[in-house]
Image (cartoon, rainbow, N blue to C red):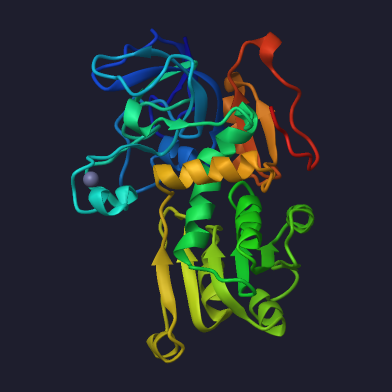
Amino acid sequence: MRAAVVTAFNQPIEVQERPIPTPGAGQVLVKLESCGLCHTDIHAARGDWPVKPSLPFVPGHEGVGRIEMFGPGVASRRLGERVALAWLGSACGACRYCVSGRETLCESQQNTGFSIDGAFADYAVADARFAVPVPDAVSALDAAPLTCAGVTTYAAVKAARVVPAERVAVFGIGGLGHLAVQYARLVGAEVIAVDVVDEKLRMASELGADHTVNAARHDPVAAIRALGGADVAIVLSVAPAVFAQSFASLNRGGRLVLVSLPADGELTLPVFDTVLKGISVIGSIVGTREDLVEVFRLHALARTTVIAQTRRLEDVEKSMADVLHGTVPARLVFDLRADDARQPAASGLGHAVG
Ligand code: ZN
Ligand code: ZN
């Protein structure tokens, strides 16, 4: 099978021929149809973070495919079932976080495409309990971005406990941001999209953002204040200036939700303002399996639109460069199906179903 393998940090990723892995106890073998490219894959491949994956490894944690084989002891799944392989590759199921519905905080978790091989390949093995079912009404090309970008922003909106008519500012419109705008709209918020690229702001408007602010031309804090201030600011950008801007744009009682992971990020908070204004600072990491089930269900109900371009796995290196250069409107998805099964690349804002 083909697999895109990171053999050294800061070296080009190689697409290699590898043997198809064998599922171990409790695992399933998944024949992949698609996998999205997340910024985290690029950080992992470059060894950007203090925690590094052990080499060599296969990135990819937005994998979607069908179960082709069971390992010993798997009784709960069926062959041919469509599943998604997300960042949360497994968790212990027994710790205080797992048993209280916070499995994303499990200290014994494995992460797909990081601590275990991911889905930039024709096949991957996965913990059967953590392969999340994908409804038939959600296409492989839509399901991939929902598996990380979707569930992460969905969980961030939930973590902020947004209520109708609150004002939500989304800092950074791209793979995550275009979905964050839609989830904020779904819970009834007035949505402000902030980015430095007009094309991305146009996309945010088409997806339901009520206001847009180009932070390259306007001071986003002044612009958001002029709109009445933000009750919630969701930070999806890694630009250092954005952290202070998002805090300063908050109203009293506001919630700052941190999602993006810059290679080295520090946030300095004015204690006086934080206390006096009753500001909450929330770190939100991906989402649970149940969050992903809900994300897929909302998409099957046509409540969300995924904007993505397809690429070939052989173009993984160029695809990462395009993401870093900001030339990608939203998400890139590797179409891993045989040539004759591929659909034309998604374009425009049509809701792709089937
Ligand atoms: Zn991701
Ligand atoms: Zn646990």
